[in-house]
Amino acid sequence: MAEITLVGTRLAEVGEEFVYHGEASACEGCPYREQCLTLTEGRRYRVTDVREGASTLECGVHDTGVTAVEVEPAPVTGTVATSNAYEGNRASLEGPCPHTGCPSHEYCEPAGVEFDESHRITEVLGDPPHEYCHLDRELTLVEFEPPEDA
Image (cartoon, rainbow, N blue to C red; front, side, top):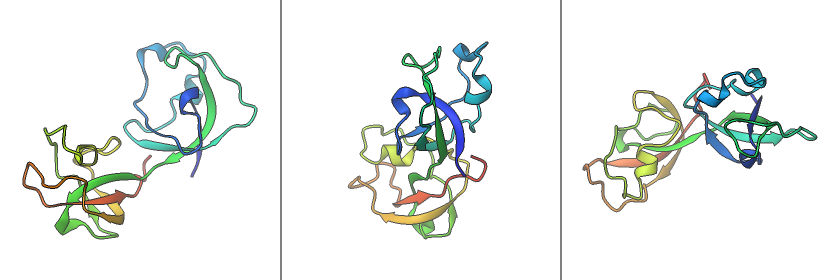
């Protein structure tokens, strides 16, 4: 279900995705806190609609201001153990990876998913972009359903 919130004007485009990081120190005393700080911290969201005629409001965090949008929780693409990679299964990420130069690193440590969280797999996407895993893991690329508490 879509939720109305305020985001920086640079993010205010349909299809744009972001991870909500919660309140910043510059939010203290802001008159728009109630409209802005409404999402679940650490979750990925997708902008589904930019409110027509919405004003651009000054913001201490976003230098170009904020505007009203509708967002919904977004699915996250990640890697899981191949033995757990089937549609409908609940699975977790395999754990941290220090190999930041690996082409699969963004999927082994995707923003918006914690290592200790289990998520339902909505689609099996296939092989990850790396040729081999430096940690000797057998991994498959999947799409996780957005968390229910997002």
